[in-house]
Structures are given as C-alpha cells and as structure tokens.
Length: 184
Image 1 (cartoon, rainbow, N blue to C red):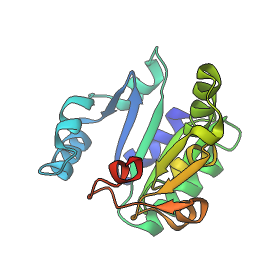
Image 2: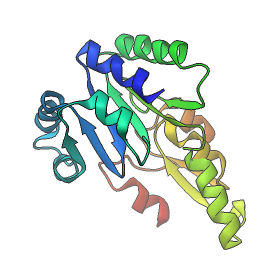
Image 3: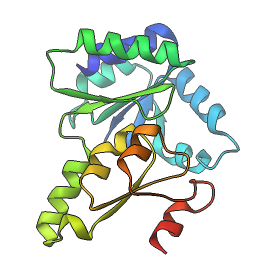
C-alpha cells in the first residue's frame, strides 16, 4: 500500500512525507519545498530535525526494514485533496489502511491501529483511569477517536465542526494557549 500511495504525490508533484522510524522522508526537491514552506513558522525547527531527503523514495519505501508508519500528502486545494483521497481509497481498498484529513488540504494514511482513541483507551486501561477522568483537547479529524474516548472532550476554538459538535466545551484556539486554558 505504501508503494502505491507514495506514487500519487510523486506523480502529481505534491508535497509529501513518508514516515519511518519517527522521521519524514521525501525526495530532495520535495524536501526543499517543505523546508521553504515552513521557514519562519513555528514548525521550522520541527521540520529541520524531523525531515530527511532520500534520493530514491520508491526504493526507500520498498526496502524500508522498519516499516512505513504514515504517509502525509499536502494538496494545493481542497478539491485536489479530495481527488487524491478518493484515489488512495480506490487503489488501496483491499489494504488495512486508515485515512484522515486533518486540514482542508492534507491527507494522512496509516494503519488501522494508528488511532489516538485506541492508544488513549489502552493507556487508560493500563493506568486504571476511567473515561470520566480523562479530558481530551482536539481540533481536527485525527482527534475524533481521541475525543470520543474521553469523558470530557474539549474543542479548540479553531476546531472543525465535527470536533466542536462532539465536545462539551470550547477553549481558546491553538494560537492563544487553548490547552492551557482548558486545563486551568
């Protein structure tokens, strides 16, 4: 599935990262576009240490011994994102993948078990914490499972409608310390 999915942004000339071992990989040109895209933003340092270029991304995906964790694709528009998302679902329908659109222009693809809600429920079980004792703060589609697993789901002010609808309270946005305000 990772080989098929990676071909799509490469063919379309879209920004993408293939994640393995906690790092995001792309071809050198795409890597440079990512660096430029996030220069001067709060993500610049993260991009600097977490993104790596590889000369042959297809070979990297094919030969990645540790497995591919996630593939992130950034489209130029919502319509393009929807088209790419549909193509992924069509081509990879028989694979055990999970897709999430976390912004109006991106698609993330991972395994079915790559769900924040599943992880939080497992951690809560290990620590003997009841759902009613958990607060989750989220803003986008990849937070739906996480929010559903919490007794107190809180939406960031800038959250997508489906997150706000699921929440019992809305806090400040992520530019104004919304998580801190929710905790306080």
